[in-house]
Image (cartoon, rainbow, N blue to C red; front, side, top):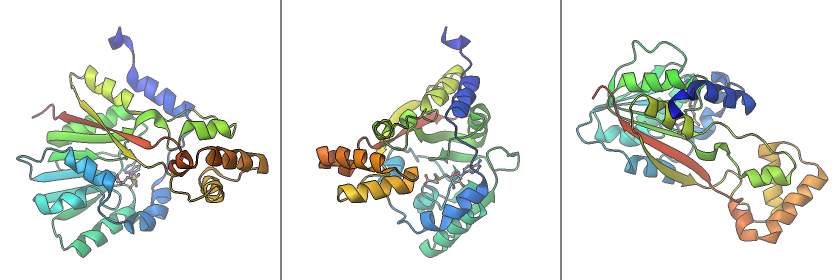
Length: 264
Ligand SMILES: C[S@@+](CC[C@H](N)C(=O)[O-])C[C@H]1O[C@@H](n2cnc3c(N)ncnc32)[C@H](O)[C@@H]1O
């Protein structure tokens, strides 16, 4: 029976098996300037927001807000936006960008998923965009539910790979993917919550290399040093089908789970 499966434990086991280490706030601090310099509007953020229902909503809690990817784009349509993140540098970027946009209804909350949220405001809408790879998924979902009055939107990596696993296999470095949205879907189901599921595709992080050499250089930046043998395998893979090479194989696919707050 499905109900006999302990998805919270399975999630933790899968996360451990994937070898992913907990990324401290300092690691995100180090990326804040780079992420904060990206244009606010992006195909991903626009696709995310297009799938949101804002009717009757006045407040938003953006969990793992980073430099404000979702919350800032919605600030002019809402009364107040709270951006919650454990990285002080991300929150600085959030506020710097809010000021540049001329919006004064954004409030930063310096907090981690793992901390106590008793004083975090309940909002009409709660989003957690690309920030849902938590250690304790059950606790995270409970927090999202407790803090949403109307609706919750959560994206998680579908399939668990940031780059096409075919490339890892080509390099003889197969890896276990990260736990994906299936765990959250099942944990919600066990709570009687029937989330809707949609997908947002974005180009692979290795996409866009204009030729095989550029592709190899990108792969080395992302995957670490490559031997000559590995580099030539990648070059051959790119050259066998340059169109596929430019796409770097399969796109990144984000699963968007949306549900009504159980307290609505
Ligand atoms: C990939 S970024 C996503 C940013 C933004 N939501 C987006 O979709 O572009 C992940 C964000 O989650 C934050 N984050 C990661 N682990 C966290 C934790 N345990 N508690 C709070 N925030 C966390 C990071 O600091 C970072 O800003």
